[in-house]
Each structure stands twice: as structure tokens, then as C-alpha cells.
Length: 444
Image 1 (spheres, rainbow, N blue to C red):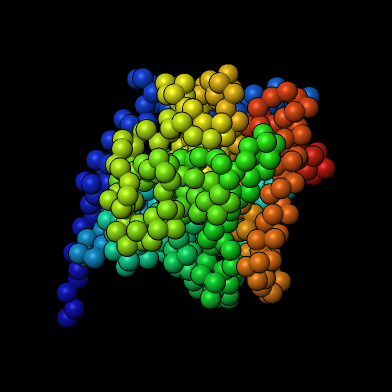
Image 2 (image 1 turned 45 degrees about the vertical axis):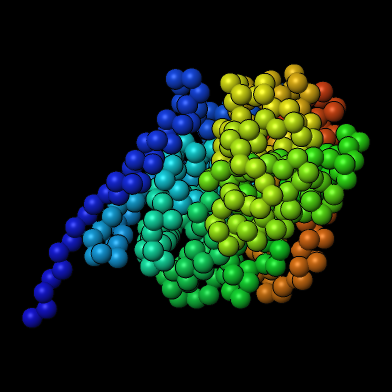
């Protein structure tokens, strides 16, 4: 007879320790920063300027559904580990919920709710027919094997499968995930449905129905918005200097594309350190160096500096492209850039926004600046729906056609209301969601 295998369920000590340390590092003074509270403050500041019934505002403000599950996953050593996982649907008023899945030790429900909310407003700003969603799993993908990540992903899909669908909720990659994770997601959903459903997820490998230009889309959107902001401020990019915090996909692509326009990057950081070169860093060479060594440190010709110095570098353009809550009321006064282009979600707190405004820093808000990714995700979803695929040139052209008018619309609302670009972006987004809510009515 076959012996039954002993099942042991344990928690990862490393993940728990990293999570605890992260919560300490996210403090401002002695009070932890709630990312979701930050979104609510941004929403409220914009809503005050709109003549909208308060009860309806509350309806579109809060997440419609937050799901929490505990996933038992078999590890390579035969034991089982429990992973806390989330999926939040903030809004489906304008279309299916849309948003990435994040694998990171510091994932919290507060963070996922905030990211889902930002997705609602981001989709509305660029005027694509999606609502906002977001997912996350508390794990460290760098400490897990490919097999463990596959089993985690498939279990995540299986436990929440009723939420997902091309007309219900369409996930995408985020921090700690990528095309391979999306491939496993799509396959698991297809096996449960017993049919091919490529439009259930975006950010897939091109061979499985992914879109050309998707990997570079968020960084390209940052470049487009920065370029348009420079035009508005009459800043010559060929003589401009820049710094980028976070040299992952978004940071590296935006830096590469701006470098091609003539921008000189003097400061770059990643999770392992920061480098500086007053004469300018070879961005293409740095990309190759990071691909080879997994870090930007020890790049030839550059001096290693403190990571926080990147945020306070005296440059024309600063691109925070790491995680949220990087610039707070404690350090905002040290920011010395002219244009701050938010490559990450929520890198600037509402309190810091006030200081940046006083210091005349032109902030391009996340819900506009990094909306290139969800825009090309929309293009991928459309291509999957019609079964016809575009060239990369066509994808990039269509992205320009979405991002440039979005920037112009937000700038117009901001100038008309004499407010920051962020408030203008939220005003525009809230108005667009409200228009649809009024037409649909509220079922009760």
C-alpha cells in the first residue's frame, strides 16, 4: 500500500521578519502612513471642488468588494506554507475591474485598496472603459522557486476564480510578477472554463496573445507626460538633468526613453544602492549592467552614494519609480527638482504635496503619469477580443494618442481651477465616473 504523505503547514520566518521591518520603515514620525487614507485625502480634496451629491460621492469613493483568502501552497521540500492573498474591486461603473497582482512581503489590504482606487481614477483619466481593481499576495518571490510560484499562482486563481473574467475583472502584472505569472493565470482560468480565454488577463507573453509594447508601456507613458510637461514649462530636454529612484521596468524604460531625447541622468538608485555621475550616466549601458549583475551598483565610471540622496538631487526632473510613500512631509522640503514625474503609485503623500506646491515643484500625478501600462493593457484586451494584433509601432502611436490628450485635459482642468495637476486629474476622473453612474443609476 502507498504511504500517506505527512502534511506540515508552516509560515516563512524571512517573510514575516521582512514584513515587520517594512512596516517600521513606512512610519512618518511614530504614526504609520496609510496609503488608502492618502487616496481618500486626494479624492476629498478634488471632490470639494465639484458640485456633487455627497451620498453619491461616498458610493464611488469606497471599494465595492475586498476579498481575503489564505492559500495553502506545497513547497519544494514537501511542506505546506500559508500565504495571505487579496483581490479588491474598487469600481466596475465604467467597465470590468482592471489592475495588477503584486507579490511582495509588504503587501497589505490597506495598500491593495489604495492601488485599486488609483486604478479607477487612472482608467478614467485616460478615458478607457475599465474600473479599478488590484490583487496581492504576501510573499517574497525572490525566495521562491519557479515551481512554488506556479503553484501559488494557480491556487490564487482557483480560490478567487468567481471574481475573474474578461468582462468582470482583468488582472495584469505588478511588482514581483510578470508575463510568466500571467501565463499560469490564464492557463488555470482556461482549464476551469474548459475553453481558451486570452482576454482574462493582460501582460501575457506575446506568443500567448500579449501585446507588443506592453512591457515598455508604463515607462513610455512617463516619458510622454514628462515631455509634455517640459513643453508646458518651456524646459529644453536636451539640456535637462534628471534622477530616477527605482531602476526596475518603469524606471529603466522611462530613463532610457528620456535619455534618447537628450536628458542627462546624474543619479540612479535601485533596491541595492545608488550611483552618481555629474557628467551623466550611460543609461543603455546601465540597463545591460543591471541585467548581468542584477544591480546598478559597481557600474563603471559612477560613484556610489546614499540611496536617499537621489530624491534630493538638484536636477530638473525627478522620477520616483519605486514604492509608495517615499516623499513625505518630513523630507519634501529637500526635494529640489522642477518636474516630479510619478512613475510609481503614491510616492508622494498629501502632506508632502502641499510642500511641493509651495516650492513650485510641478508634480505629474501617478494616475496620469504611469497610466501608459493600463492603457496598453486595454489595447491587449481589445486585441484579444477581436483576435487581431497590432505592430509595436501602432501600439506606441495609439498610446501617444491617448496619453497626450489626457495630459492636456488634466492641465486644462488644473489651470481653470487654479490647482495642482493631481487635483485636476482627480476632478476629471471623478467627473467621468459620475457621468456614467448618473446614466446607469444606482441599483437598490
